[in-house]
Image (tube, rainbow, N blue to C red):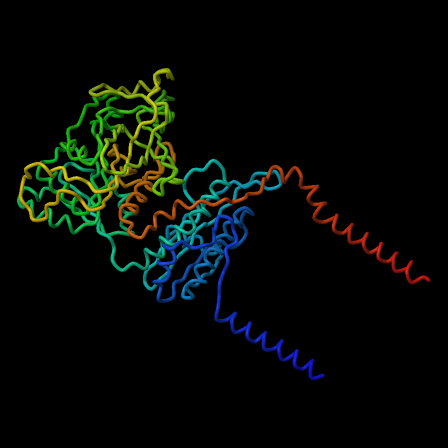
Length: 547
């Protein structure tokens, strides 16, 4: 009896110790091959700074296609990892059906999906969104990429891969106390604000934007440079007038002192609006007086136009019915539809970007790292300028042997210590801020000034991500937003877009064909085996105890 009491006491003590250890030591183990539930160091740093309740509401609840139950499950499991790291993060899943209008007003537009179930196609509408509230700040998170994918499975995989970046980016946005400052440069015939509205309004949700005119260099160039250095990034969007030496020097020293730059440049004067109005136009080189500046950084933009057989469409009048002109959407080879670098976080899983009368970039050998971002297809043709471009050429027969120019570079990321263009030259004015070489810096150069230009519909800005005439969807806005995020990202947050996972999807066609077998295997066969075991066991008992 004493031995039994002793053993019971030891067992109780062991259970108490295990219970105490269990409450004081908590560890989650990620046993997946691709470590999909292991938070990156970047995300861990971001959520560790959350010092008051942060509420995440996910609108993935209710009746929706079975494959998107996977997105719901992955989202829930990922958010549970955040909660495990910081108990101040609170998550809830809500059914959006009763609040659709309110969600749409907040910018959470529904997605219409084509669903295949039991061999039949049907349409379904879901709200793949989440809302984050932290104090007085709010942010919305898209859980389904807008990029056009080859299949719904690819879209779902992209969505799951982007979960960490999407949530970490939004949490970082609502938590950060000081926003980075971006200057939209003017004074050299840059794009009007209304044509940049779609891009800049999205940018303004995360950064502080301000207009900055280089005209001030005429009065006080040193003060202009000093003021420009208060900014973190300068955007130069389609300048059409020459830069003076003072203006170039200001930009050069802004870069040398660590300022980031996003260049959107047209080296050829060619505009689709004037072509539509007259049916014919002269395309000729545009001198911006920036060649030596960019040359010192390691690139050269050529004054050639690129025609690409993989191109966007434009509406063309093909005839009349009564008094009404009839339009047809046709490929316009002067509007390349270009893919992004699949191995870089700026362009990974990004929809093709539409360019308009784009030029080609050459890279030069120096100490700067150059990463291609936007590259044409192989089926290209170089068109020298000056040249006449006629709209009627769209109807000409395509001779594929003429389009053997190969891949052409349209956008490049430059990273490293830039040599100042005025390092071995007499500067146009003196300044104590002069530097002959920059600190580690980065810039993006795009050889198309229209990459960020949105259309107008009834004199109001139209979304940069689509075309008002053809309804084609493009990745221009996402590409530019990702570019800015990369240039200003000091935490490595944008690199989370490079996360790759192996999501094993169900083969629907095979499952449909073999459903009878698997229904039998999973439902009928276990019952048959159970009944067989029961009969065999009863027969054995009867035989054993009958004696």
